[in-house]
Length: 585
Image (cartoon, rainbow, N blue to C red; front, side, top):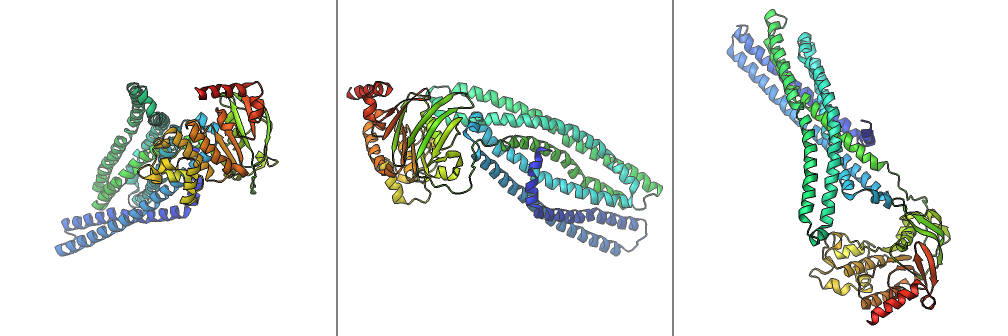
């Protein structure tokens, strides 16, 4: 139960609703326990008539009608308050589910990129959906039935002791056996629930990756192998669920057996005491039988609740594992930061924790607001890493990055990223309309601003050619669009933000050279007062930059203007001549 202590703050948050639910439960149980007493009184009236203690049949009928009316009234009131009880506790559980999902999601957003490299998307989804749902069952139905059972036991057993103490002791004698059985079964359920949730995460991850990579699966014709792998994983998951179900299946037969045994004891012991005269009224035995049967469902729910608690414990442990993860990138500043865009790298080195690959080694350069810097180099040279460090997606391993003369760690992280327009190498678009994908960079943008941004990204004509134009809904990850269209929509999303810093990570690789030239001409006008980084494998993309740096194995091997670099032997000149000859061909 230690892991479930995390939920105490939510119980405190909704304490008034829970207190009201407790009061309503007590009222409902009090009226429910009136029914057996009234039934017992009715039996006593009939017994008195049989024994000729009452001779007037009209008196018997009126007594029975009166008791029946009271029974109906008590049942109606009990049912009404039971309805209110369910509404109170179940609604609170939904509130807590909402709060917990938001807490988990917000924490996911705070965690650094390294976290997402080490954990699979399917597992993250499972913890925020299936695991939170298991926890909701604990804070809702489990809590409600626990309160209901405890209240009923206190009221019913208290009343039973007051009228027949000895018979009560015989009636509740099987309960300790029940408690011990529940404890042992709960331990087994806890272990198997943990395994079931782990396999569910694996299954979710596999299906999520299969659906996301369906194009590759179809292109390689590996549907049969994928189906085979899914079947094997699904069968393993099924087996683990069956193992859990076999243990859970022992609960209810055990409850029925022990409650049935209690009924036998009531009939035998109660009947014996009635014959001996210890119990004066036959109605008492009838009351006890009804009371025992009233306790049947609550006692049965003890096992069910115990199972829910064990599953919730296993799920909350998994949730807490992620909630305990400390973000590597934190916002150290509360005051606002004004970003102009003067950036300097001073002996910056960076090594990826997950692979231990050193991406950058002693990188130093300066760029002023309004300037454009081009970055070229072979794959894996560290080009994208520079952009990631500017956005503080990672922190440097050594050295220092300054923006406007202030160390980047001393800037407000939210303000820093608000002033950055980033177009990643792998353009990511959401399953929404094209317009909303573009307005993701600026939610308050007008339609005219959206059109202007797409015209500058040279994608406006493509969009208006679609049947629904800007309202066209994109498939997952923008699959509706071609590679070049996705890149240009991503560029429009960045420039509509009107940021101080623009980061373009090889975002023109999927467009033709003519379109590329048009986009670059537009970007030169847009970026006059902005600091712009352009990463590319094409010399044509970076040639007009104020400064170009060449990276090899994480080190700067050349830097200067296009004219300076093409007149100097090195990687840039070789790349230029190669691409020039290819263009001529």
